[in-house]
Length: 170
Image 1 (tube, rainbow, N blue to C red):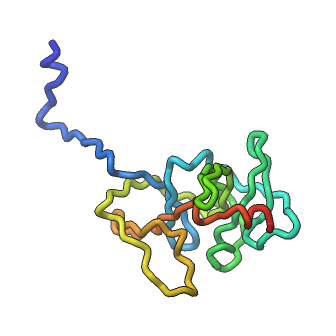
Image 2: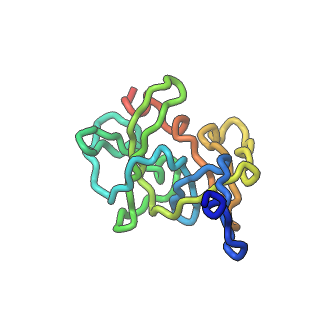
Image 3: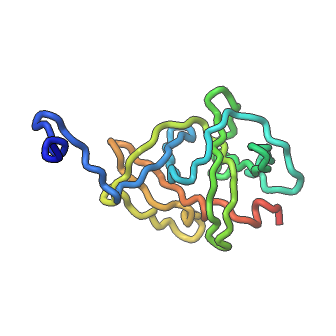
């Protein structure tokens, strides 16, 4: 009986699970696709206007109350110097939990993006290092660039994208 359970039908293609494949939630900023590690995603939330906090950087839109936790909201359009846009029904806040690189502290933040795109599997051979663009272009928060299904996806390292000094307004 055990032999029958282990046999596979020859006409069915079975997907092998490759443990080195990593999944990323991808989202759009204008026509550009970005990705973040799916394991850091807590929730995808429709747009709600955050409560502004005085003396914070322009890309920190304010805070929202998410299930009893006060969550700072980072506007990636502003952070990445995109043109200002009107928030509409496709605009979402992705609530993320991340460990900050400089302190090892876990934080919950939200990022405002134009729209969620897909969940993509990225194999190590599809990943490339972020290009070196000189000292004036900040690429330290780019984990890499992946070529997935004819798309180039910029993969972000959330722990490097946001730091505590920015969140606290110091």
